[in-house]
Every structure is written in structure tokens, then in C-alpha cells.
Amino acid sequence: MPLDRTSIAELDADTGLPAPDLPSLPDLLRDRLATCRTLPSLPAAAARVIGLARSPEPCLNDFAKIIEQDQALTMRLLALANSAFYARGTNRVTSCLDAVSRLGLDATLAAALSFGLPRTGSSDTLEYDYLWQRAIIAALSAQQLAQQLCPRETGQVFTTALIQDIGILALEAVDTNGYTERIPGVRHHEMLCETERRHYGCDHALVGAWLAVGWGVPHHLAAGIIESHGPLMDGNPRNLCLRLSCRIADSWLSPTPAQAFSNLLHQLAPLASLDIALVVSAMEDLQHRLPSMAELFEATCPPDLNSVALLAEAKELLFEQNLRLHHRLTEKQRELEALHASHVELDEQHRTDHLTRLANRPWLEKLLNHHFEGSRLSQQSLTVMFIDLDHFKRINDHYGHRFGDEVLIHFSAALDNMVRESDIAGRYGGEEFLVIMPHTRRDQAVILADRIRHYLNTQPLAQAEGEPLHVTASIGIASLEDAEFKDANAMVDAADKAMYGVKHDGRDGVAHYKE
Ligand SMILES: Nc1nc2c(ncn2[C@@H]2O[C@H](COP(=O)(O)OP(=O)(O)OP(=O)(O)O)[C@@H](O)[C@H]2O)c(=O)[nH]1
Image (tube, rainbow, N blue to C red):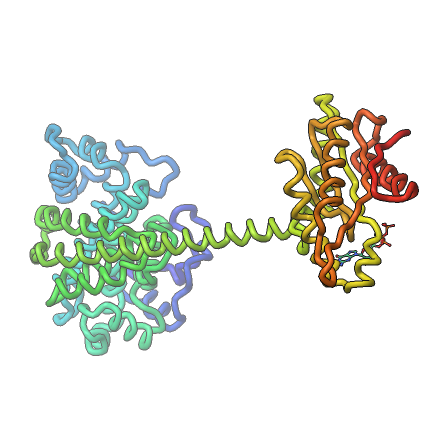
């Protein structure tokens, strides 16, 4: 019976609404398909089961009733429910309802579809037996992979993989002699698809999806058929299962399967999202499950594989994949460490004065704000000391700026050595320095100021023209106990003011702030 669907974009079997995300067929091919009277069709019972699956709330009882009307389908469903797959040591089921309950809706739909699928077409030369074996291997391996990668979609993935090549039968039906003459054979899937695209404007995946929509299968199954030919690199686990299942089937049925699998595993090795061990264990499982599945579907059992050679190859690849992963991890770790180091360095640069390596002014201000608030809240003492080297301009003028720099560097190192570990000594600007002294009272700070002055009086900061160069400093001190400072800046201003008092009184001295 010709299908009245003209484009798969016209409907969505799930919702009955247009399905815009399914691409349209090329016009010419669509017309030929729409008027073709020999397209593969489903038996009435299978079609009714699919129709029921689309209803909003399908119930198992309704499925069982439809299936019971078809004796052959009932017998197969019972056999499937009692097969090693589903029985799992439990009692044999003898009624259709029990079989449907054990299988669940997804598997019942898959069974109705697959048992009803046409096994042959009109050509004498197309290898239907090969296609059917390929479908079973693909369906089983897709199911195995889906159990690990997307367990909730296992049923759908199985059905989609099983019917993904149905478009070949449809193309052959619309172009009976031409199709088999043109195609290079069904064993070279990629070449087959290429030839189809050249001659018909699309490959059999799109035609298969169109046909499936015509049968009324749920929209996601049709979409899955279209996806089955995409590249392996895909973030969607369902697509990965489908695409990989075709490749597993092709390798399995290749005249040189060990070589074909080795190529496939090599392609898979760089895929970070897929563990090769999973593929290998899926293949091992397949070996055991294929005979009963083939018997159930009345298909020729695909050949056994030489699993010893395959596993040896796979183990080697697994090792390589692990090595690569380890290498990638080490590289990432190294990048992270380098990033951390440069961050630390940047942070350091951000905080320190480039000439003296002491804390710079922004960092001093930030720290002082922090200590000011903390000391006020905890009512702890806090003192700041403003140090200005005396007559520094003269040093620069006499000996040059570079010489002045050396003097600043020397003084900074000495200052850093003289303060306590909990103090913060920094360069506030030019030849001005600030020392923040948490938990320190004014009288304790005066001791440090005297120590600094003593150092300067006894230790030359440089040798100028063969003579020791002594520098003096004017030092101002402000402590929290001196006044009610409104903020940290006010404290620095107070210490600065005290320092200016010393300058005013002739330099080389210490004073503390008085309101
Ligand atoms: N070598 C050098 N000199 C600097 C640096 N920063 C500021 N100065 C100099 O420090 C001198 C400060 O001069 P003034 O502000 O007049 O103060 P002073 O000569 O120390 O005199 P008093 O503070 O009144 O004792 C100027 O000559 C600045 O050029 C620096 O990074 N390196």
C-alpha cells in the first residue's frame, strides 16, 4: 500500500504535531517513494502495537490483547520472555500478558517491530541474510553499550539499531534493478551510503526514517535512524551507542574481523568519553548472546570471533589509552602548576615595590585597613611608624640617582631585618617608609624607632667616594591610644604629621602624634 506521507517533516509520531527537526527527502525521491506500491510494510498486529505505543498512556493489558490475536507474534514474544535475556532464572511465562509484563513496553515494541520486519525484498542480488545479521549484531551491541552509557534508553536504542537499515529495502523497492546495479554491495557501508547520496540525494538512513514514520513508530526512533550514520565524536551517548553499533557490526562481519576491530579500537582510543574496556566487554558478551538471539529471530547466526587475538589487541590499546590519559593528566597538572606559579608571581609583583622588594603602598594601605578594623573591634593596640630619610635629595644630587637607589635598597633590607615578624615594613613612596605594628603600643614602637636611628648612626648605608655615607631619618609615630582616628588613613596622616614635627625641629629624631 503506498504511504500517504509526503515528508517526514510533516508529522511526529509521538505528538501528532509537525516534526521540524527531521530533514525532508529530496523531492524526486519522495515522489517515487510516495507512489511505490512495494515498500516494506508491517503485519497488521505489529502496526497496531506501534499505534498503541503512541497512545498517551499505553497499558500492558491492551498490548497483550492485540498481540494475542497474532499467534506467530505471541509465540515469539513468549520465547523472547523465556530466553536467557529476560528469564534470568525466574519461572517460565505462559501467557501473553505475563510475557509483555516481563519484557516491558520498550522491548515489546522492539519485538513486534523486529518480528514483523520484512526479511527480504524484490532483488535476487541484495544480501538480505547479511543485512539481517548486521541488524542483530548492531541491535545487541547498541543495547550492551546503552546499558552502561544511557541505561534509560536501552530499549529505544535496541529498536533503532535493529531497524536502522530498513531504508535499504525501501530504496531497493523504488529502484529495483537500478539500486543493486549502482551500489557497491551492502558490505561496504560507507561506500554504500556515498553511492546512495550521489544517486538519490540522500542515504538510506533518511529513507528509513521516512518509512518508519509512515509505519507510525515514535518520533525519537525515526530521529535515531537518521543519527545512526553520524561521526563517532558526539556528546550524546545515545548517538554514540547507535553509531558505534553499526561499526561493531561491520567489523564483526568483515572477512578479516581481527583487523577490522583493531582499526575500530584505534579509532576509539582517542575518544575520551568512551572506555575501550566497555567496548571489549560488550563484544565478549555479544559472542555469548548472538546464537540465542539469531535463533529467536530465525536468522543465520553470525560467525564466532577469535576473541583471544582480539583481546590481546584490545589490551594493548587499553594500555595505550591509559598511557595517553596519564600523559594528558600530567600535562594538565603541569599547566596548572605553571598557572599557579605565575599567579603567585603576579600576586607578589602586585604587592611589592619593585626597587626595594618591600610591601608597596597599595598593599600597605590594604593591610593597614584590615589591622585598623581588627584592632578597633578587639580593642587591641596598633601603631604605625612613618620614616622619612633626611636630605635625600642631596644624596641624589651629589652621587646620582642610581647611587640613591642603592641607599634605598640597603636601608630597606636593614629595616626589614629590624622589625618583628608580625610587623609589616613597606615603602610608602620615594624615600618614605611605613611600618605597621599590630599589637604594639606607642612605647614599644619608640624602642624600634631608637633601634633604627642607632643603626643609621652606626652603620653607613653606602660608601661614597671611599668614605662611609651615613644617613639619618625623621620618624613619626601614631598609636590607636593617641586619638580617636576615624580610619586607617587618619592614622597615617597623624604619623606623617609627627614626622614633620621632627623635620621642623632639625631632623634625625622621633616624635609621636599629639592631638
Ligand atoms: N634615588 C632615588 N631617589 C628617590 C626615589 N624616590 C624619591 N627620591 C628622591 O628623594 C628625594 C626627596 O627629596 P625631598 O622630598 O626634598 O626630601 P629630602 O631631600 O629627603 O629632604 P627632607 O625630607 O626635608 O629631609 C628627591 O630627590 C627624590 O628624587 C627613588 O626611588 N630613588
